[in-house]
Length: 110
Ligand code: SF4
Ligand code: SF4
Image 1: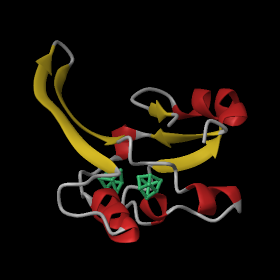
Image 2: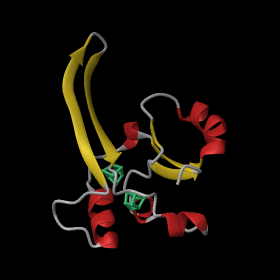
Image 3: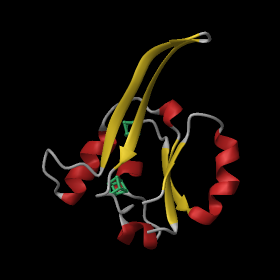
């Protein structure tokens, strides 16, 4: 699935875990299998103040829901993201999309 990438604009991630649970349900994963897993960084104090981020990270089980992505359907984790901070896009569009998102953005290409 190297033609597509997942962008997570994690400055808007609420840490709600909906992406994790939705993916597990969609793929019938058991409770120890994760297509995507929420990580937590902080709280850490910098000169500018405290930083505490949630960053969901896709695992090797994530294939970007290849069948849905290929026919243009939204993938389950993106559809249920309460922060609306996830998107799956063609790799060739990354250069156009990323500058507008600013900082605290992660890109995953399975
Ligand atoms: S794109 Fe599909 S496989 Fe990957 S995390 Fe989202 S729901 Fe799971
Ligand atoms: S569903 Fe969205 S807001 Fe919730 S933890 Fe996942 S990425 Fe963050």
